[in-house]
Structure formats: C-alpha cells, structure tokens
Length: 372
Image (cartoon, rainbow, N blue to C red; front, side, top):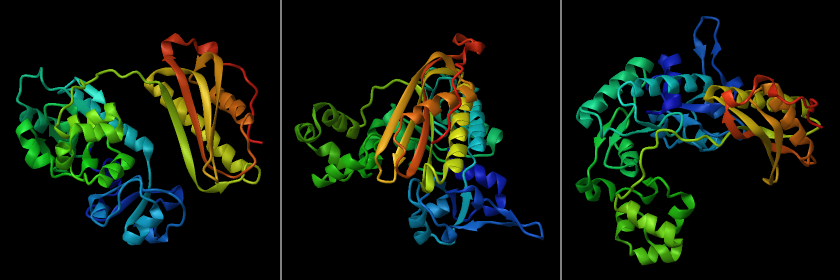
C-alpha cells in the first residue's frame, strides 16, 4: 500500500492532500475545531517529546522525513509539516478491506503485515499485468486507497520491484532486468540487509547491489559467515526459492508503548496503570480478532537506562479475556524490579491455541494486581 497510514488519514482529512503530513503524534495533537467550523492542525515545529514518525506522505518524504525517525529531528527538516496522531483501528479496518479485495481476484496470499502481501499468480489464467491492474482497481474501489505492485519470478525481486515506481506503480521485473534496474540500487534495498550489515558491507567498499553481486562469495562468507554470506551472494543475483506461504502460524501477539517521558512507578502510577490496562485490552482484542487464546502472558519493561526485563506466566488454561490477561500480566509485573523510571511497557501473549480449543469458562481466576 502507498504511504498506507498517511493515506488513510488523508481520506479523513482530504484538505491535507498535497501537503507534508507526518503521522506519529499524541492524542493531544489531534485536529481541533475552530469557532468557524474549520479544523486546526498541529504543526511538527510545535512538537516536544521522544516520539517517532509512524509514516509520512510523499511530500514529507521529499523533505527527508521517513518512518522510524525521531519527531524532534523530523521537526528540524520539516517544521511546517502537519502532525497527526496514529489511528490504528482505522488502519486495521482498511487493511482487512484491501486484503479482502485482493483475495477476490488472487486468493493465494501470504500476509506480510498490515500493508503488505505476497501473491502467487502462476495458476491464474490472465496475464500478470492485467491481474495487477484489476487488483489496483479493486483495492481503490474498496478502500479509496492506492497500492503499488511488483511482479517478478520470486519474492525477493517482487519486494524490490514494488517500491521502484511508487505511488500507484506496476513494475514487471524479469531476470534480464536485474543488471539495469536492480544492481544500481543501494545494497540496503534488499530485504534482509539491515543497518549493521549495510555498514559492514560499506566498510568493505560494497555499497550497491551490483557491487555486492560482483563480490567474491568467499569474501562474503569470510566476513559474514557461510550461511549469511552465501545468502548475500545469491540475493544480489536475484535468486530466491522461498514459496508464497498462504497460512502462517502465529506464535505470539504483543502490544507495547514507548512513553513521551520516563514514568516513575510510584509517582506516575495512575498513568502507568491506565496504559497497562489499555495494552492488555488491545492484546485481548488482537487475540479475539485472529481467533486465538493464550496460555502464556508476559510483560516487557525498558527502563530509563535502556536496560530491559521480561517476565512470563503460564496459565492453567488458555484465555483471550482482557480481564484475565490483565490479572496475569499484573502478576508478572509483581516479579519485576520497579526501582527506576520506565520508558517502555509491553504486554505479550504466547502459547497460542485456536479459540475453539479453549473453553469459555477456562479463564483463570487470579487476584487483580496493579503497579506498586
């Protein structure tokens, strides 16, 4: 999907089309209605805190503002950009509808997240370009949103191709196109080469995918290990044998929140408790929506010094009940050190089983415990 979260916001606020818009603010950054009925939007220059950019429109990206960037840094690059809080329920609804629209045309789908999927078109009678156009039209009709499609012999190349002609692009990429279209790109454009590997490659004088393709396999294996080095060599040549996996077993569901300021376990107990309860409810809603119940509930804490701790609790029976998850997570919290300020709090549900396998009355009756 093209700038997915930002595009969903533009459906709500069409007057912002064509402007630099950044999603990632707080609830207090939501638009306010003026006396004349018009909306007043927050500006990035007025933001103060530690939040990060969730996404941005292409106009904001042209100014250097990208996802995962700190909002304070983004404000230096685009002070006049509009700042909006994220609306995750709206994004999840749009995600469900876009995937349903695609599935009606090409049902062999691998779900890769809220705004991305892989499709296997090999068994469909129409040519790939016609299918891509039908898919784009169906998604637009169902959601009002645009998507970009990459068509290639495998998932690795299709992923790269889908980003080459955004927005609203359809890119066909064959093996013969690799030298001209893929090799000039930065090595980091290959999904699976992260910041550390990219920096290490740059230290070896390898910046582009073409330079990676020309590097001796032995050199890559010596510096990155035999398995990853061999994969780097194959990926640079556009080789990928992974199939499209229609059903992927979910192993866990989690939600976490990074705070605008470090919160004290005692002084900010009420605020922490409210956030903690909301996270538990979100995890429960995610479990119910996905059709799972959980046997293991856990928490994650990251403190002001960036040290992190986790605690888990295995229940006598699986549950997807928000109150039961809150009680179990509270027990986990009792076992965690709470002597210093907290910058992140998370709740995780693991040991999943299909909801029909867990009886409705199986929710454990544990004492309700809050933050101490």
